[in-house]
Image 1: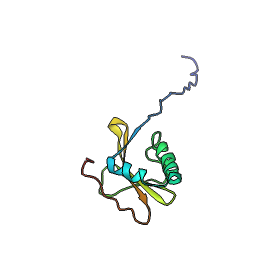
Image 2: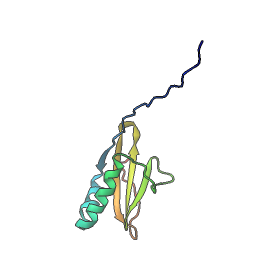
Image 3: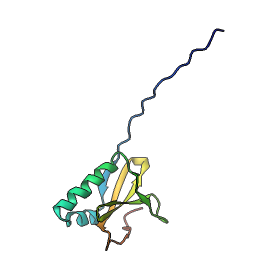
Image 4: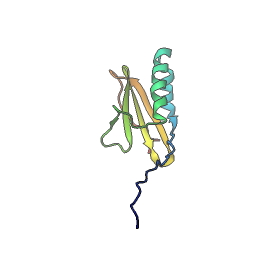
Length: 107
């Protein structure tokens, strides 16, 4: 056989897009925030659609697939369901007073 030729190719992988849903309690927390803060947090949540584990996210110990991220002086608590490409927002609140309590409907 002759001299081998080097081959290279690019494999295109479609980017996975996650759907974002709020638990009812988390949506009430979000809606109660000032408009400027809601815009800031909504922008951060929008990034979870393409990257549910962004730089700076922290996985909560003892809670399966549950993470938190900061957005200014607020935290966003969420769960990732990779099998169905879903991010569930569990809670939104200020750093100073926000306690992470997972709702019973989150399994």
